[in-house]
Length: 455
Image 1 (tube, helix red, strand yellow):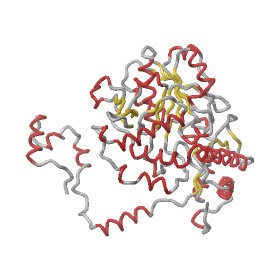
Image 2 (image 1 turned 90 degrees about the vertical axis):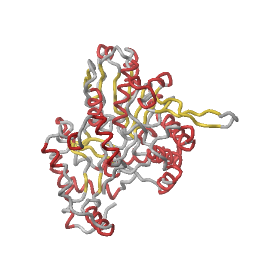
Image 3 (image 1 turned 45 degrees about the vertical axis):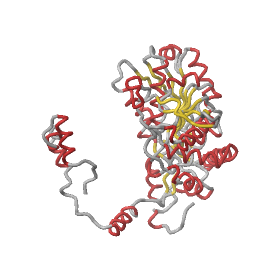
Image 4 (image 1 turned 120 degrees about the vertical axis):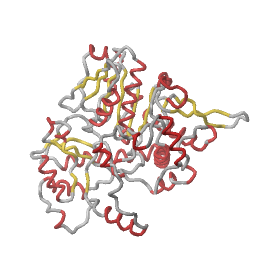
C-alpha cells in the first residue's frame, strides 16, 4: 500500500517543476549501494491484523523489563498517578498539528498558558515559553539566545560536569556558526564546576552549568551568578532532573538569567527514551530574544478573558532569517501532561516527592558505604557518584543478577573509570537498596537461577 496523497499527475507536475524526468532520476545522486539497501522488494508480503499482533507481542517479549534499575543520568523513573494520563488523554487535548490560527484554539492556548505559568513558578523566573523538544535542545537554544543578547562575545563556557548529551547538542548547534568558540570548564574534587577566571568570563556570552550537574552534585548558582554578572556574562542553568527544582533554591532566586530543564520527571514515562519536554524560562527583559512561542492572557471585545499567541518568533511566522529559533512547534501533549501532574500534586505534594528522593538517595549512599565511597564531597539530590573497585565488572555482574547498578561513567569520563552514577527515587524502597548492595558485593546469583520477585 502506498501512503501518499499524490496522484501520478501531481507527481509529474512536481517533477517537471524541479527539472527531473522521473522519481528515479530525482534520486540518482544517492549512491547506488544506499539505494539498493532502501529497496522494499525484499520485504515479506503483508500479514493480517491478528498475525501482526502475535508478531509484535513476540518481539515485545524479548525486552528485559524485570530488572531493578538505579539508572538516572538524564532520564528518571518516577511514579505517575493514573489521573495524569487519564486527564491528558482526553479528546479535547488531541488537537491538530499546530494552530496556525491560534486564537481559534482557546483550549490549546489556555493549556499552554497554564504550562508556562507552572514552569515560571518552578524555575523562579519571570517568563517561560511554550516548551522545547527536550532538555538538550533547550540548552542549545539558550546558548544561541545568549549570543543574540551578547553578540560581540563569540565565546561559550560549558561546564565539563554538564550532561555530555547536552554538550554534544550544543556543539552541533554551533557547528557552522562562524567564530563562535566553546571552552570546557573543569570540575573540582567536590564535583562542582571550578569558576572560570574573570578574563574568560569577560569574553563569554554565557556560562552553562548543570543544576544538579550530571554527577548529581548541586552547583552553587548564587556564587556563579555573581562571578558571571561582574563581567557582564550571562548564566544559564540546565536541570536534567526537574523534580530537584522543588527541593533546591530556584534558579531565579539564585540570579540565573536563563533556566532550562528536562521535564520528563514531571509526569512523563521513560518510554524507552522519549519523548521528553524542554522547559525554558528567562528574565522578562530578555523576552524579545526568547525562542519558540509564548502565549499571553488578555480580554476580548466583551471584556472576557482570552488567550493569544503573544510571541511567535520563528521562521514560519514571517520572521524568516530573523527568527530566534528553527524549532517549529512545541511538545503540546507532553506539556499538558506535565501541567496536569504539577496541578494534581501542587506545591506541597511536589515538595514531598522531592524530599523522598533526597532522603532515599542519601540512605542509599549510606547503605553502600564500605562497598564503595562517594567520589565527590559536594551536596547532591537523588543521584551520586560511587567510587568502587572494578566498577564495570561489578556493574556487569549486577546486570546478570537482574539489577541495573546505575551507569558506569568511564565511557563519558575516562578519569572516572572506577565510578558508577547511581540514582534513587521514590520508587526505590529499602528492599530494593538491599538488592543493589548485594549485587555490587557480588552476592546475588544470576537472574536466570532466581525465582523471587523484586521491588
